[in-house]
Length: 368
Ligand SMILES: Cc1ncc(COP(=O)(O)O)c(C=O)c1O
Image (cartoon, rainbow, N blue to C red; front, top):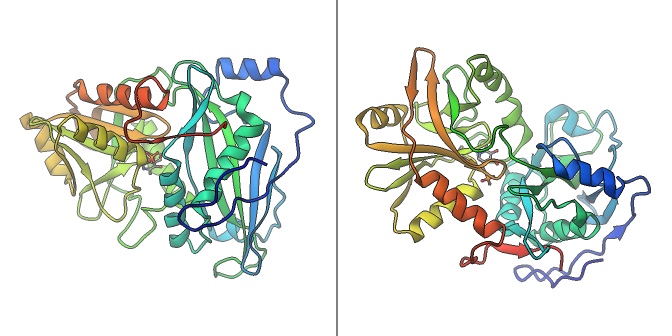
């Protein structure tokens, strides 16, 4: 068990995890081969964490166990009604070998907000952070040390109670798996092309857009396929009033010529932690920052008039990606590119990889 202090907010003592080591994990040589070229989301470490929850027992049976298939009753509620949420967060290896993660309290809180919306139980943030530490304690060797590499951590929670009826499940499982990661987009950081989805929306008023729940991503797959058919990398969604929302898995930021950064804000957008951090770094540099509605017309006219000088997308997986082209059914708008997106990306990744001072106290060490 990893010893950590009790939760300062709730006073909860740490969980007492049982640890079962994998007997058929990868050999050091197999692991080295994977880490040399990890891709994204295709290889997994040797272990996983799970914690059970029930209405009667609360959070119980915290375990670290060998990575492997999950046995589910065919009537498990998640398979029928999609009661599921997840998170995405990375572990970074610093030059001295130590392993750190970035703002895990924010991911823990967002998992709680997603849980509330999906009628799932809220995992205490201290348990969430402890789960990351427990996995790193057994799979720390899986955190790669190459440039731009990390260990992508995927916490998720789902309804496992077996019943066919639409109500919140009384039995839930929380899991954490991890996948070594290189660059998200093949070809490294390059401007991406975006397809404007007019026929499909990602979220509606009062819907689940602000929650990180599988259904939002399931509904983005068809428009994402449309994007690929139009030779675009990603899809951007509008709301019912033709305001810009976000991409399928990233937030959007517009840079105006007076240096102001503007990002769409609405109750149906996922509140990105990368976006929040980049905007803070921009504020530190003296930029004005606004969260507000941005209509498609404002975007297109701003680019045409030169008022908008840069547009970029951001999220944990790809960090920062300049948007090079916006394609609609009857137009193609080339987007202006500038220096700010890449310079903010460098500053953020320098902090994450320990190459620059972490003045905001965003890093949390996982391996000690
Ligand atoms: C729909 C969506 N928007 C935005 C983001 C960015 O969030 P974060 O910066 O916390 O990764 C994500 C996830 O990465 C996402 O899935």
